[in-house]
Structures are given as C-alpha cells and as structure tokens.
Length: 252
Image (cartoon, rainbow, N blue to C red; front, top):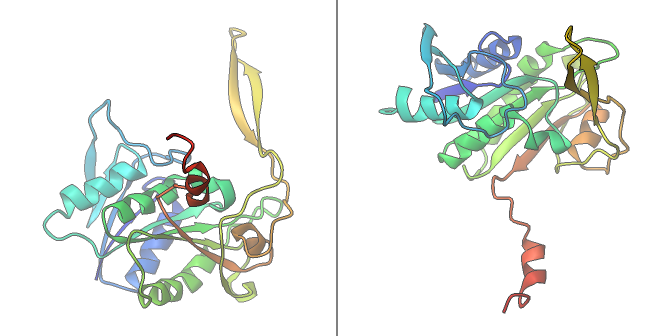
C-alpha cells in the first residue's frame, strides 16, 4: 500500500512526524508532500496567481510553497503520477478540527482533495487542553494505526473523507472511539483585536475565545469533551437535500 501524507502546519511540524510514524506502521511506502510554511486556516484554497515551488527535502519527502490542496494535487498528479497513492492521510493537526473548524481547516482540505481525486482519505487532529498546555502527540501514535486499519477494512466510498480527532488526553485515558456527526459551537468563538504599529497605523488579529460549548450528544464536540476519539464521515458535497425538496415548484 502506498500512502501519501500532508498537513497544514508545515513540513517541520511535530504532528507531521507523528503522522509519518502512524503511516509507517501500515506501509513501508510512505511519501510526504507538505507545505513549506504553516497554512493553518487555508481551507480548500488553491494557488492560482503565482507559480508553485516544490523541493525534495528528504527521501520521498517534498516541501511545496503552497496550500495543503496544492500539496495533494502535486503529490497525486505530478510526483506520484505513474503510481498514485492508495491512501491519503492529512495531519496530525495541532489542535482539533471539529464543528465549524472543518470549513476553515487546511488539514481537512487535504483529505477533501484526496476524496475528490478518488482516493480514500483521512484527516487526523490532536485536541489540546489550552489551560494545561499539554499536547499529547503520543495519543495519535498509540491509537491512530488501529483506527486507520479498521476504516480501511470497511466498505468505504472514496468520495467520503474521514475526520478523526483525538481528545487532549494521554493514550491510556482515552475512553474509546465514537462515530459522530459534525457539531456546532453555541457561542461566538472569534473576535477582532485592534493594535497599532509604530506609525500609529492600525492592524488586526483574529482572536479565538476558548470557552466550552454545551454540545448535542453524538457530535464531534460532545465526544471530545468526554475523552473519546471522534470519527466523523464528511462529504465535499454541501447540498442540503431537505432544502431542495422545499424549493421544488418555487421557480416554475
């Protein structure tokens, strides 16, 4: 099995090394194509207005000056053109990708692009307890390989990507694995902070509130809050079918 891995935190991110270690428990044919700089929040964006730079920085390892989507396309349509990967893994992201995060996430986008190319794809993210400041990278390494094996053993349509989130706990404290649906936070998470440079000109930072929500049971948020690994099947098709039924006849 040939595995292509990518991320959005960049080629030197610790989570990418964790993902490579996970992949190498499954195969000895692992290829890395990742952004040369942090692309968090890039979502499913493409680089269209400047050339892509791609450098081989190690054995089967390439850094792309672009987004996670660029990296997957470069990996599948150029680097591995004659022998495409059987599986794409994206992550392990520094921080969870749950609820509305999935619409912003470059980690998710890497898996989306894989699914659009007809390759089974899994995004992985490590939740963080920001109060404690601990990042339990060992949790993904301990539980990730078995989760991937079980997913690959199912009759899984490549048009669906899998979003796996590990709770902010050491491996032995994880309470299990739960198949979830995408949740929604119940308060505003983002506000704009205004600052001034030395010329008294304003500039702005997006600032995220880190308050707990009260999520619905069965959602990815709910699972992570309860120390479970969340596995959420996602589809790039954003059509809301009940709304199409409601609109039938409106535009006749």
